[in-house]
Length: 410
View 1 (cartoon, rainbow, N blue to C red):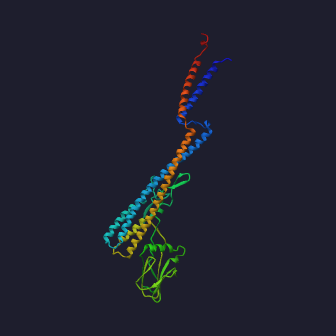
View 2 (cartoon, rainbow, N blue to C red):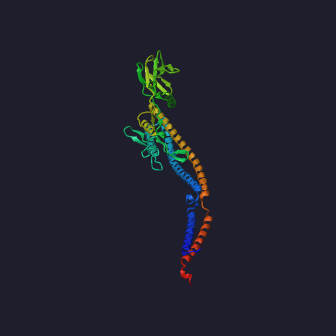
View 3 (cartoon, rainbow, N blue to C red):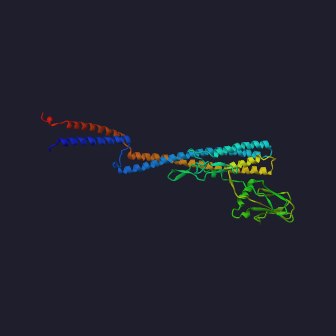
């Protein structure tokens, strides 16, 4: 069979192109560090690599979310620790001011320090997170969490009770913040009974004071009736010849609460001191349990400062104000402690998950390498072989293309 110049040319050119193709493939494997350059190279392996890649991408996102969660929780924990320190100092000052020995100038000094603590707490409660949003505003982190309502003189919460969260593993989503509504604005106002009224003529005057806030608060929690408001009216009924009995909603208590009545002598009832003046035998004094109300530490301090700055000697009303403030500060501190405990729990969970995610990432990376990672020693050998082959076919091609008829007739 005759071999033509064209056939020799085409064979040589094909040899160059095929060798270049193998050389480029080896170079691509070296550069991309994978032996699977296209799905056609290994359909099964390519599908596995794709799945592992998606898993690694998800683990990377979980890692970034975990960093964001930990940073935000770290900021919140630091803020709450400072809040607790300020509250503890306010409590010490409140208790000291209630001992009855402070002069007006000393009470003013305490009020001034409390004013500074209040401003410090206000700033802390309006702290920002690592992204610049308000830490305690819930979902509405563009709104300042707390502000002073000039019309009422009270500090109000402006956000919502939302709690943002990020996913840190396939089955775990962790909150990155706590709403100020829950942490700060849910302090139960220590109840104070309403001023007594003479409902049935007989008594000439009456007074009701809280002398044991904890006992009265417990009674209030267990007995306030949201469904039947009439049951929130407590009465001292004077009966013949010189007795009294306590009523609730117009009915005697079970078991009955009764005793001997003496005008001006205090009647102790569930943390209350009730003083009725007037003749024995008939009449009734009523007072009500107030509706439940929530507040925050800022308003508690405002009320305490007002009491401290009220001129005059220390009296029962002042002592009641101090006791109320101490109780509310304690409740606020408990709420902050609960939030800090929850943060610690979240961080512990996150640390455990981060450890698991890191282990999974190592395993997934190793599996991906087993499937697709290039064998560098083999690729280097292939590169050397193909470069040598390319030089050879190029030399042959050059010889063929430079051959002419005159070479055969010499």
